[in-house]
Image (cartoon, rainbow, N blue to C red):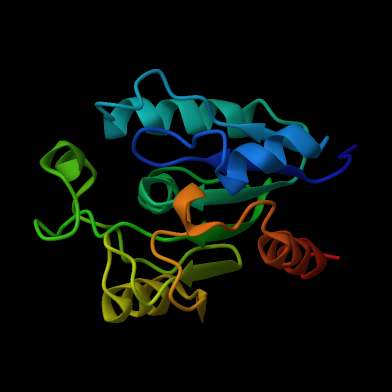
Length: 183
């Protein structure tokens, strides 16, 4: 029997530091767990996929995936290569344009191309209109391809610790919306 929905956080390149909303949530919420990758500095898609899939398969709970930046690409690669009815939704925040030399570093190119298939679960993409790692139009394109609800959060940069979001209550509300669509 499944219990409370588990929230799995998927940080992006270099992980999420102490002031990042993902880290703050991990310190506050009982039903949240970080997908801890072995190498945040030199991410390898195949390794990150195995780690994520293992954590999903070993869970007894329904899962909402909550990604930031490169983690958004990871969700879409996972959905293109694996499946699990345990995953009931995804909140993808500040998706990095891994195909763009202008927006992301070379070390992330092994995550390209960005999968653009419709996701098999409800999803929400939140971006900023001045994110240095993706243009607003490209983020909208990704959301459209993935079948995701799209939210432009305004001029908050990469929606990370430097954006000053702190506990980011709005993000928690979006997770609740994803969970409630399954009930």
